[in-house]
Picture 1 (cartoon, rainbow, N blue to C red):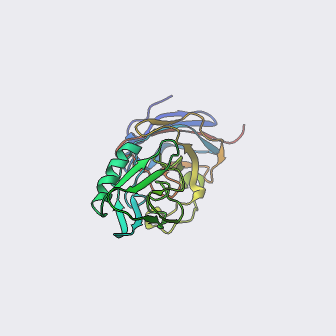
Picture 2: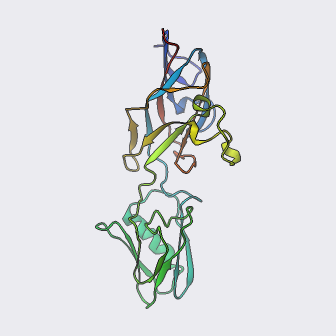
Picture 3: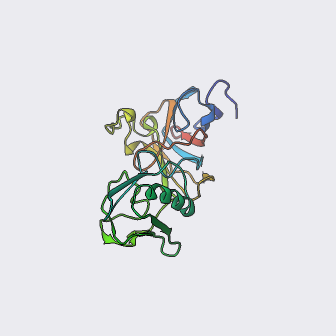
Length: 265
């Protein structure tokens, strides 16, 4: 094992037909922790297959993301359409109930009591000072409605109860993308910031089995998969949610170990 100085690879093990690269995003020379490219030296000359051996990702990203799932919309008899924007962050039912109460009370006549029922796993909104009813009809994927358990058009009622359980834990999986390693000809998604990205560029899907503030540790990795490039002179890595959005680690770094094998002896 040797340590390469002035290179993003911390540990670089070179064998006759096997190379193990330990990558720490804090050692990158450019880019962000969630999206960067490594220029390798020495090159991996004859890679045939590779796999993710293990990885560690800090759960420092937000489950309520700005412009993605931060808007909650419903209608009341007295005030019509109510639209609130939840500040990005990670919430428990108790902390989110407080935030929702402040945001909704400022916009609705009479006030509303928000309850996260721990037994049913559902959210309830009830008027506190007036008689009336509320309805929920906004099913846009960019809203927080689904996260709060309002996944279908609901008739007017008081209280208004979500038809599904709430999920404040966010995505159950994070995808690791590498267009160069997995599919160097992958098709762009249409987003100018994501040229070359497609689901065929996923090299591993990491299950999220911890809560916010913990480390997501995947010790099992992935099986070996073919790489379209036998000569590996760079490695590009991106962390993304299933909806394609970049995972914002809020300045924290992550690690990944890649294993490459060459031609059979």
